[in-house]
Each structure stands twice: as structure tokens, then as C-alpha cells.
Image (cartoon, rainbow, N blue to C red; front, side, top):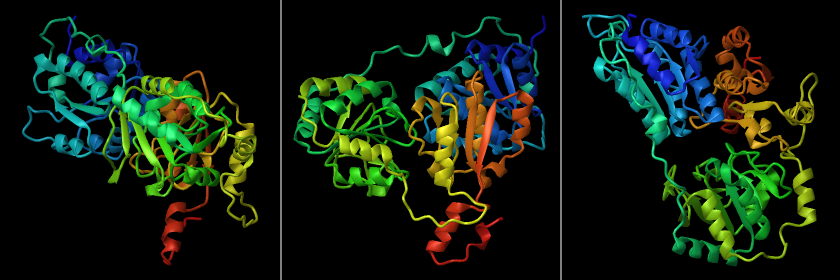
Length: 486
């Protein structure tokens, strides 16, 4: 049987257990993508390259697998530059097959130096120009993506892809068999002793969990109960403690008014698996008076220009929490009272005065109605922009059923994120919450959803404008006409 290089490259991807790929075809990737489909990979053909990468981002987050997408070279590749910084900052493992212009031609219309474009986003780029080494280089891209938790883009000139394969038929050992299998990192006893002393002497403690603490949720909740502490999460981990009566919800710019008040009372915040970003502390306004202990696999001195914490414990979340629990005695409830539990359960997340207008709905009422009526087993995708604040406040919805990726601050990702979640959860239903400005940026993907039978319900909070810009322009005393669309 005659094999081309693109056949072998497809074999390597499938040897990495790639089951789903988001694609938009062109000269530099269509033969490879066709072979992927021929060999059983589920190809979801989108209408814009940005959406291929954005969908793969959500797929990676929800499936726990490496997200895979493909675009053609040149203008196909330049379309993904907005998605990549978000994937890098969200620490999502991805491999993107981008192709490259043919190296055997003196001129090609879509040629461009792709490496600097990609590396400027923080993603890795590898130009694969040695046919004999290509299978190993593809496997190594999967190793790098998983080790560094970021996207890796590979460029393969399509004239080299079209060449006959003259190498061996055996494939390189897959990445899963080469990645280091190591145990969880235990804390240093000195760090635990110092942190335990801080916790023992603290009066009001908030234990705040991020994505790095998802696997330790039960242990964190138990320690919080033992120490009379309240629970909170970062925005990406919202819902992690949805069933706990002393969960105050999101700690960050999206905090409820109740959470803001309680965080302001805290004299110690134990941040587990949190990056302690600017938004997580709302620019220092949320718990600025509290002593912050960061328990993380990679504690940081600075986070987005701010001192991250005052004390540190480097450890796996479960092992770190277990070690702290062993050193601390239970204390009598003082902060965790029935009255506080009732306040947390009944207080509105935002009690800004209402100004009713005919034929429009207050977004708080919309969210309350959806919270009450949407099936509990649906996956929720919260896009970005002004509207996302409201949809983040659906307290009964657990972390496992919620997705938000906001690291680059771009709008226009919601439809693609919903497609990625739907691909990762093919037996379920996804509901997307988006704004009109964001949804209209990639409205063409409605056709993709229909063609591939993706079960997605779309809820657009339509204010006929770019809401964030209106508020900012008005705050500066400027004309908001440029942000209003009707």
C-alpha cells in the first residue's frame, strides 16, 4: 500500500488517542485532515479558524485530554492569534496542526513566517522540515503540550506532506507511555508548621479554591468546617462548593455583595490551587487586609504585577490540606452560624436599585428564572463580556457543569466554547450564555452546530450594545453612541 507523509502523520495523531479534531480545511491541512477522518477521528468542521482553536480549548478543559485543532497555513493560521493567548494563560494542553507553505516553490501566495506570529502569543511553534523525524516530532509536541500545559503549533509544508513515505511503518512510542509517572508533591514540614500557626491564630478564615484544588474539594470543605472558615472559589472553579451552606461563591471582580462584605472581614485567606490573579482579588480591593497563604504546586511571588501572598506552602492540594488538618484542632463555630448560612442562601448577589423599562427584563430576574427552570444535568457555558457577570451567579450549578475561559479578555468565544463542551459531552445538552455583541462575532457557527448535530441551547442577553463600554464611557463623561447598536 502506498503511503504519503500525511498518512503517517495522521497515524501518529491517532496513536496519541486523538478522537476529536476541530478543523477548517485549506491547501496545507486538507489531505492530513481527510486521512484523520478516514481513520475514525471525529472531525468537526467549523466556519472560522478562530472557532476551531477556541472549541478545542473548551474540549481540553472539559475532557481532560489534549485539545486538537487544525488550520491551513498563512491566513488560516493568522486567524487563530486571538484564541492562542487565552489558551496559553488558561494553561490548556493543545496541539494544532497548521501546515506550512511549500518549501519547494519559489513563491506561494499564502506564505508567511509563521513562527514569530505564534510565539508572540506564548504558544510554542515547531516547523517540521525533516520528513524522517516528523513522526517523532509530532509525538514530542504532545509531550510538550502536556508537560508545559500550553498550546503547541506544528507547521508542516504541504509539499513535504504530499511526498511518499519511505520510512519505517512502526510509530513512535505514544506520549502517554513517556510522560513521567510521579507521586503527588508533599509539603515541607516547616511550611506546614508556619501555616498551621497562622491558621490557629486567625480569627476569621476564608479558604479559597482555584482550578488546582478541584480534586481536593472534599478535604478543603472538611477543614473549613473544622476551622470555622468560610469557603470561596476563583471564577473558573465556581460551583466547587455549591452544596455547602458556608460557600460564599466567587472571590473576584464577580463577587456578590455578600461575599465582598465577608471577604472584607477575613483576617486570613488560605488560597489553594489559585494563581491569585488581579481579578481574583479585584485589584487588591477584596481581602487587602488579610494575611494570604498560597498553597500551590508552583507558588509565585508576583501575580500580574501584585504580590501574590505573604506566606507559602508548596504542595499538592490534597496532601497540603491533610497535613494542615493533622496539626490543627477543631474550633467552636463562631463565624459559621445559622444566621450567616441563611444570609448566604437568601441574599441577592446584586441589590442595585431597579429601574423597570417596558418590554425589557432585568438580567437578575432572567438568571433567577433560568436557575430555577434549566435541567440540573445541563452543562453551562458562560462566555465573556458584560453579561457574564450575571450568569456566573447560579448557585445550585456545580463546577462540573460550568465552563468559563476568560484569560485574554476577548469576547466572541461563546459559540465555539459551547461546541467544544458539546463535543466533550456528546450525550448531554449544553446551554450557552452570551451577549449580543459576542454572539454576533461568530454567528456563522450556528450552521456548524446544526450540521454536526450538537445539542446546544443559546441564551443571548441582548442589550443592543456593548454594555461594558457603555458603562465605562458614561463613567468618563463621554458620549456612548459608538457602543450602541439597538
